[in-house]
Length: 109
Length: 147
Length: 134
Image (cartoon, rainbow over all chains, first blue to last red; front, side, top):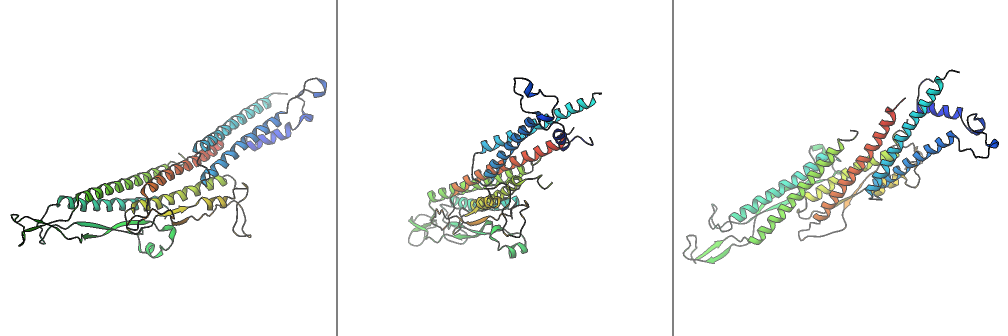
């Protein structure tokens, strides 16, 4: 890894664990009566989409405020703060993922 | 020009104009019974004339300021006029300023009118002060971007 | 890199500029509240800004010429300054309504500060995302 950035982490996710078929870690769905949950990558993608949606919503509200279509200042500030917090949570989750990756790579085979 | 300096200048001119008006009102109130002045005759009521003019600083701005977007108007006191009303005549032969018929000429100043004008001038002055404070507020908060 | 500062930041920055101009117009009206034959002025920018943003689709910018590229450049919004048609004529030809101007001043000031805070938040979020690195 030539540098631990978001794009590198994303590439790692996409090449490593794309769907259930290639996974050796998760339970084989056909061999047990339980259903396997969604893959880690899918969960992560959904989380990122949620954060993106929150940001889009905050952006839309900010544009409405700028053009005077709304005067709901509290709503706009709340949406903006939610977006801010969601971004910070996502950054911390990314950090944890990268830490976990580094931990795994340190393991000697 | 969309900057805060314009706001300060315009509101400052408003305050100066109202202050000039207050000065004439004070003069009128103080001389409400003055029967003798240096020019002869009773004191004559003074009043200010306001005029709005474009807020332009340099010659180039004045010449180029045909753009209505930049046409912010200052206010200026262009004239101090004397009231044209005739003085009030009261019959008092014993007064040292009485004329041949025994009438004394008093200034035609209505106390209530002057008090009302004073309240109006105060109100306008305070409005301009609030405008300046809002301008200062906005300018200072713009400095906080990125802090 | 061109999407680092998005359309919303541009919209908010334009709104800030417009509100500053509106503040100057309102100050002008207040200063001239007793000038005879002075007509109160008004500044409108909301519609121009909304159409420049092309509010229906958040993806592209409206262009004035077919040959222009909608690359997300800054919207050029021209405000409209005109005489306020809601006339409260005084007996000396002055049409300034002082109470209306004062409340317009207060509202404009608040919206200006709100837009300022929103821009601040966006810049702070970008700075945070850049600085937190592993």
